[in-house]
Picture 1 (tube, chains in turn yellow, brown):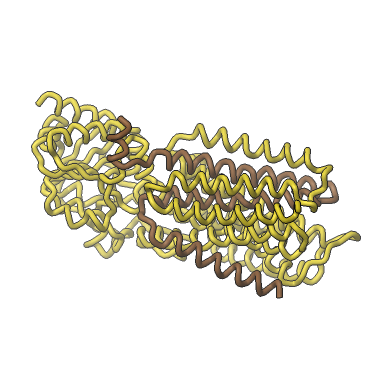
Picture 2: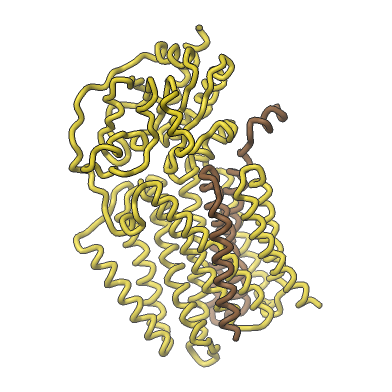
Amino acid sequence: MMIFLIQCGFYASVLLFILGLKRMSHPSTAHAGIRWAGAGMVVAVVATVFLPEIDQSRYILILVAVMTGSILAWVSGKRVAMTDMPQMVALYNGMGGGSAACIGAIALMQTTGQESIHLTPTALVLGLLGSVIGAISFSGSLIAFAKLQGWMDKRYMFPGQHQFNVLLMIAIAVLGVMIFREPQMGLIGLFFGLSLLLGLSMTLPIGGADMPVVISLYNAFTGLAVAFEGYLLMSQGGVAAAGGIALIIAGMVVGAAGTLLTQLMAKAMNRSLFNVLFGSMSSAGSAAIEGSMKEVQANDAGVMMAFAERVVIVPGYGMAVAQAQHKIWELCQKLIDRGVKVRFAIHPVAGRMPGHMNVLLAEAGVPYDLIEDMEDINAEFDQTDVTLVIGANDVVNPVARTDEGSPIYGMPILDADHSRNVIVIKRGKGTGFAGIENALFFADNCRMLYGDGQEMAGKLIQSLKQL
Amino acid sequence: MDTFIALYIFMLAGFTGYEIIGRVPVILHTPLMSGSNFVHGIVLVGAMIALGHAHSLAEQIIGFIAVVLGAGNAAGGYVVTERMLEMFRSSKDRGASS
């Protein structure tokens, strides 16, 4: 009876995960979706506790470990600011990958020594694969976290790095074959050591701008690793096999979904996945731009917007860093009250992850029906009177359409330059994340409003109040 | 036979994941990535099973780490996703609540 209930528990948890993810894919049901998935997790964990395979003398150890991990993560997740969300996702994802690698390590260790267990060849291969992928995801995600957190802003490269990575992969593959033939403690240790090193060495040279794609990729990696380790558990039979199946399904769903999401992101940045991982972005070679940047005062900019019919706001990560989103929304509400049609235009890679900007705007209270994707808004720029660009740079750079020598050539951009007037709020005259001069800033219909995003938004609100 | 059943499961689960994400608006990409990050927190179950029948001290230590990491993945993933999704409202909801 107990066993039947446990089986039902795992079945229900998988069902809840899939239905939860399904609900998460629509804005109005998304919040309920995560609750469904959360319920699934609770059911699965409770079912696991009652598994006959779990030695009762381990209950305390398991309880302490679960409490330690979840309390630390829960508190840090509650405290983190919305702008720092991407690195937290990277961190938690890395933990999952590490956990999967540990499961593989334990199973491999148990195949050595006297009281060894027997694994089928398929289970052994998938267990090894899951371990490598999990370990890469673990060390790689930690580097991604450190980079986004600003702990290491440089890109660490050394000559022959790609060859080094290829050699590492070969070494890991050879070790894997040797372990497959005859498991030995020393080999297993080396196998995991090299896998962790590969994760480090793959991620270190990747620049901050590409990190979102990398995090998404490692998210898919962890999913795959979890699915493979799930097979390992399933192949050992018993009631715990049901838990293994839950791991396979949940992990595989995430693996596939994550791969698709990674492709969508890479496409939005006009870079292939191969390019992100093995290429390096060149910052030289773009043509110099003629003309000068023309400055505007906040009062005049405010008047321009107040008497416009249609205004489009193009926010970038700079807005979030300046914590200007609340002020910007206040400004928009003032404009809407005056009868101005206001829309937000979001580039697929605005922020540090696709959709990150939507989250930040949502935090400020912007309703999601005012927010438009790039494909939907681009045709509307021709009829737009004023486009306000705040904290965005490369995603509105027309060079991407015209200059074949530019590193961002071919990247889809927001056609802000097509609107009648453009106002750019910017801290100083420097270049953007990719280090490329922005032709938009030199255009005749563009005016620069220099200053801190939040302060300038405040001044714009002031100028509207005075009208 | 078991191997083939597993292969079917792998395949169908893969399609499910692909289908779920396929028609998602960009605005939900970040929450969804975070949400799928939470879902692979199911690794906690595997970690608990592994620790539950670990024998040697080394195995128990690694098992303990696995459970801590897995629990962190699950709990952290949930909190972060739930915080993000809590903020999504349409202008209609907002009018009703304020």
